[in-house]
Image (cartoon, rainbow, N blue to C red; front, side):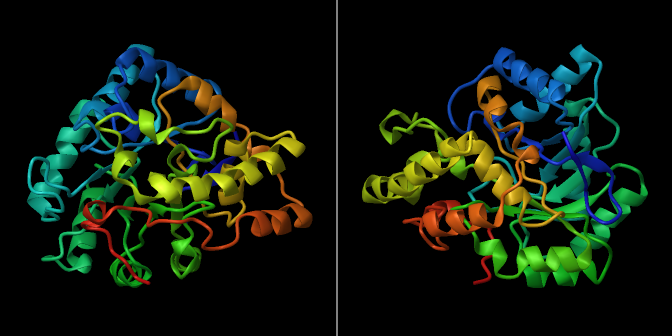
Length: 328
């Protein structure tokens, strides 16, 4: 696995990380054995960067990672998040120093570590200026509890405000062949400021694969049940485009998933995508994406097959948008 820097001043990590939200059951039930097998496969493939959060489960994802590291005697570079108040009404966030410190300490205990490679503010607390929150993160970094600081789902304007206080190592947002909002300022701002841009859901929450999804089989707790892009006419429309992408990929000997991740990697050297899975077989389908190099013809064909704005339906349902900073 090739390496990329986690921001201007950060450590080198695998060019593709592993998102661990699935370990917490967001896309259906899973168990420790399956999660361990996925982490084993990631390690064997050279993936050394994990992305998790205290709310995944809640706590389950962090606990599984901690248990794996204790059992295997190995250490991933781990990014985790805090700021969302677990058990409170959706959208409730607390970015105060006392709350963030307490949540970080609890996360480290579950992970079995005395510091994390990267700590994100998962959602903004709008009662506290982002400059003040950045000061808190820098304080935790100075104390050695975190190696790098980051924000999830903020705007380019907010990133610039935070960066005026101190260097922001990473920003995480959804970005893929069907979600291209970050091209309207965020990817550019990150490049200018030396900030890593970390695309989550680069596989479109599973739609970019070689097997048709069936929304009718989604479990009651599956995040996609309420997602507009997976419902009715929207889903049928979107699958027509995905099937063209599959044909493009198959002609070149690539899986659809590998093509989708390779596309994110080739949008800039500062991008580090974190596809999520709970199954080793799914991971194997895209693990070689860092070796794919598109020709000019490939890029032109991808833009023809999936023109900007092709996806039908919003990327989130209204209730899922709470706390996300929208800038366009």
